[in-house]
Image (cartoon, rainbow, N blue to C red; front, top):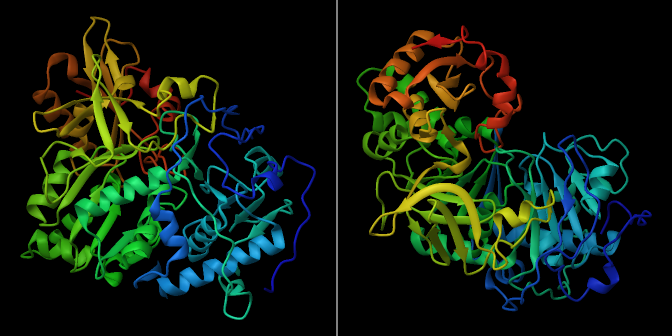
Length: 562
């Protein structure tokens, strides 16, 4: 295969690569120093002792060794859409795997970092790594930059990026990888067989950082297999479907939908958040994998279309935005407001199914066509069990846990979240109804205790504020423990202060005295990922918002008063 030549290893830990050729790296076997990345000090965490699950999940074996039954990968950009048959993707991933093995010595247990926006090359690298028994580390642009510290700290044998490599050793540009794996550029002979056991780590994924510094977590092959089986059981993705993916591929769940396409022969469309609305109608998906903020924005766009063209129905305007083939819409990762759920389910006629899960658990519960209850996040999917503690905190037990510890975290963080068997204490408050539907009330940490002893759960109040089209996000604080102060991110600029004030009055009229908001600070500029106040899944970062608006939060004269 033509392309870049083999690089010799630098003088740094190489993970005992010769001893790891037979099997992929086991959970927690690596010990390295971790880069600060300007985010505070994290340390590689050793796993707690437990017996290993030695079963071999079928999902990864099938997507790496069997030719896909059909389907296409569409890469949608503002300037157009590129379509690649999944069978060609499968073939080229084998050629790239040969190249990585022959030129860079990549094999089972080695780790490849990918620091790039969504692209065809991202998918190709991920599949090539799986075929070699190598791990990937999904590194989100904006949180990380190419550096020797990054490569060494996370034990990367290679770092692929679409950013300027800056001469960092073992760092390779993403550009040209697809062509590198083209016909005639390498052997089409079978790769050496690789077996993924249930507890083998396929990828290092990082928490969103909504509650602090992102933690690194090794996701096991068994957890991927279990989640994909559970989703397929309730949604039945099949040829003719086209799943629309725009969140970063560094988030493992977004790669699930590529794996699903390879398994079941349906199409998958890959784009970015910036291009999502511009490409939806063009690619005509049947399923959209989104987050609540995306659907909030979609609702506002549909409302704007209705105002511009009186006489159209909300359903017609929604189909104009999303295309005419929508089967259902998926949302999770953060709470969706009741107003948005009702709008899509009842007004627009596009079923929007909310679910629940964390980085540490993957998909736990999901509403779906066979079992849907308004206000809930659904029943537990197969392989998951929801437990409610005496304190009301939700814990999740899994047949195949994502892991039982963080790979990279501060000392003691793993013990706060994981039991030795992988049961996860989520930190969320909730309850189960008599039919097993889960209702989430908010974060235990987000309960505000006032000086009169009253405990206020902030999520329902924030949802009431967000129900107004003028408000994109609302985060509540109590700077003096005597009353509530909201920081709201306006839905547009200039901010509609009159509408925000009216919403404040309406919410206060609907809540108890202790739940009433005394004043609202309007964020300027609105919360954004670039501004550091939203995660990559568009969840507000409370600690950062509190710090950014410390002065107006503590200034009684600031903001819109009730």
